[in-house]
Image (cartoon, rainbow, N blue to C red):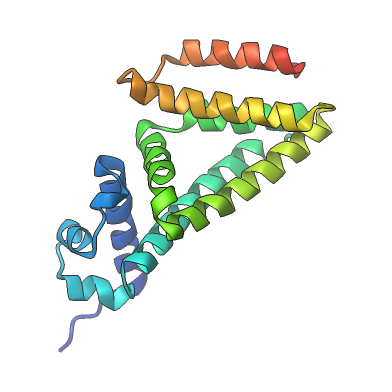
Length: 189
């Protein structure tokens, strides 16, 4: 009797392997073969569920990004304006774990040479920018573009800075940077 395989579970395992490989070694290390080895299957099993490397990347990255977007939406739930802005930025800088930050860094590094990754990152960035600008508008911030740019630089800097120094900055240090940012933008706590 043929073995029954849960398609959703198999795709989830493939996605988990893609993300783990990207976090550990960057997206250049993500191949059909490396994913197959990670899930304990043959390459033909992997390509049975995804048509090729691009589809494999798309499915895995989209799933990961959607999970992070859902976390961000949950963090902002029941908040508007300045409180929503702060909740979003706190989520990105203070609550995401190192593996999540490594995933984003790997995605940003690989996106210029991987069109599939570029498309997924662009879609997330469009959502992020629209939400951020809308919340800044609700908060009464008049220089939306400058405020959004400043917040993006702060988030990127706090995430990337962790890798530059070898370990994330302590929460207290990151909170102080954010407090200074909120004062500069006139966004009360």
